[in-house]
Image (tube, rainbow, N blue to C red):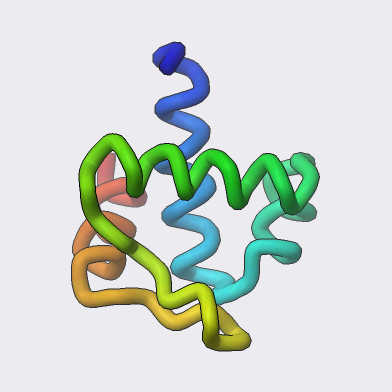
Length: 75
């Protein structure tokens, strides 16, 4: 994965954790919802972690996602 896409994936995750909604994240980041989903799924696959419970609406984050989100916004 390119570094730019990797950073965008982390940003997409952080914003999704804050909004609880992939569609809202897509609007905020000027991306389509499918792209946001793919970015987060790719990040989860590479790290062998699941950040979000995708069956909930709004999306529920797992404990790890909260820590990663705070870290992303700090740096």
